[in-house]
Image (cartoon, rainbow, N blue to C red; front, side, top):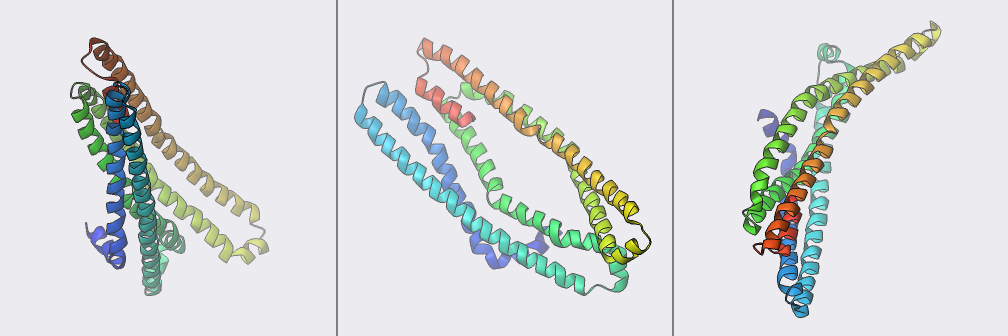
Length: 283
């Protein structure tokens, strides 16, 4: 919490963009949640009853809703990028000024490589985190909660399938985060090591050439570089499991919805529009 409080100071000058961006994202999410219900109306009331006037009217409304959602998504991206980029520039400038005030003892203790990493990679990650927070971390929870609510409203009986899918997805995410997080912390240390080797070689290039130590320094850099590469690959191998597993779970849910919904549709207790709308909310 102390870190968030300190970083909030650099976001304060851009609070308007930081507030407008999530609000525009809310508009986009609302539009996305409206479309399946409108499609259900077209299928169940328009096509089923051969009411072409209703189909055209709802179709035009869907186009309007889509356009409003697109404007909200584009506007959110514009304001989120402006806020995060300016925030990153101010934070980088503040870190640089702080480095200039450090004593020689602190500079030697921290190390040039670590300071370079803090000024570049670390600031960029915080900047990207803010951008994600204003866009994805706003969109995903709203869309998930909204889809759950709309799915229950659309068909409470089919919504029981979510009670099986959600725990599996949450468990998978928890396992991936628990295994990947320490590796991403290790990546930071490996990156510091690569920067350290590069900095030492550049600052002492004349000494390296004078004592014919090029091969030795190449081996040092290769070792540091391969360590960073191997750790990054290991972390990404764990992280990439999330996407395929979620798609598998969702597609299994779609199959279950089509299967059980089809049985109910044949029995006359469920409409085709309800099944289509529920599948859209499940995805």
